[in-house]
Length: 111
Image 1 (cartoon, rainbow, N blue to C red):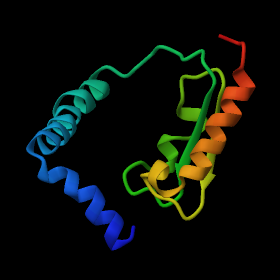
Image 2 (cartoon, rainbow, N blue to C red):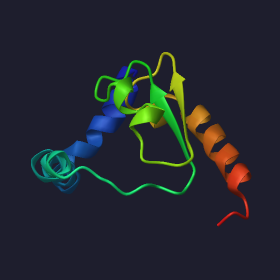
Image 3 (cartoon, rainbow, N blue to C red):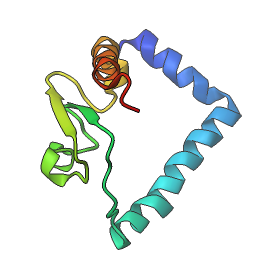
């Protein structure tokens, strides 16, 4: 990210409401949701088609956790994106948009 992009992103956290919302979201995930998912892993299967993009340089989620064999989905495809990290929508919005449009065309009239 460029210094300008970092400044633009970080400026939002000067607003106490935004900062509190972000802090509380991550705190809830780390303190409640993550431990709960370890104690009682999800068993339900997803029937909707899932198309995932995973940045090869993702520092937060190892690619082994996103592979097809670890999903509970009937129709799951993953695309590994070189030169991209955890925030793929920010890093490659063009690719995300393209894949969303492809999924919309693929599933048009299905639901």
